[in-house]
Length: 351
Image (cartoon, rainbow, N blue to C red; front, side):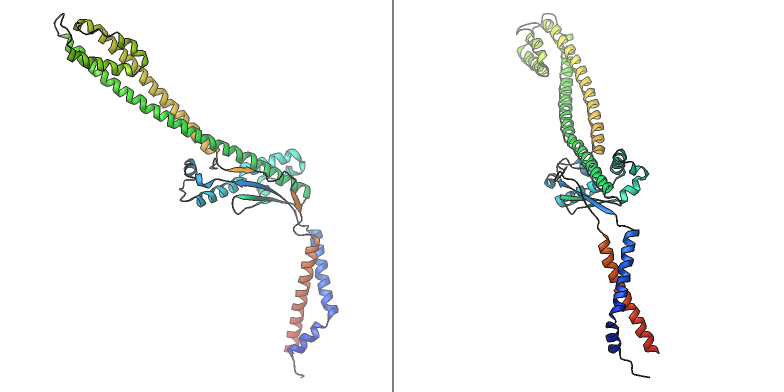
């Protein structure tokens, strides 16, 4: 048996050009046939711009309420906002609306459902700035329709959600105004209760006083201060305060005036109670609107902005054209030749 030398076997195999070319050609033909039988889908892409002011995240107190999390720094807040926008883009709400619009454009979409449509979509982003939307469909015309309709849905729905988030800020201001008026009204009611108690005490004291007794100056001054305090609660009471009997008048002359003052204070107390009730109802209404706006805002920041970079049609390409399939097939044929030669050399070595 002759000596077997690996180097000689490799040298002989490498000079069999017809066989090598035959494998490469066969692989290329198989690649071309595969490209014809299973054509690669076309990819349509469109861009949009996304911007955010992350340094105002402290003002967006509603976002942690929606996300059920606290953001420690602007970067965490910005990343959550970008992720939330991406999640919304693939949500049933956005994809279903896209499909409904497509069905109105072309009957070819009638057989497509939401899960299948979602599988055709992709979005590429690293941060705020330039986002690229992509759609893969066998028909280039349908691919362009899909990515453009999807982009329009994202723009419309996300900006609508941002507008609702901006309304939350106004509702916050409205809540603050209501709370401030509630506090002021409660303080007025408390002061009025003190006035009513003092007037009641004065009336009880005067009830047993002799006829014609003159109200002394030392006693008139506290009563005057009490009336001034009550009048200060409502400008409409200024006229009643001006009707206070003059110095030197008897207690009986003061009695009708004080009773009138006590009656007016009771009416004012009822008005304050009614106002507090109305403010409570108003606060409940604003809280309901706040909660609804929170859900409608989908957690998107009021400072988020989504728009179109360029108003141009989508770019359509075929990521895996027939030429690439032929090249890959040829490479696969060359590798197959190498495996064939290794198998031949190994069989020859055993014999």
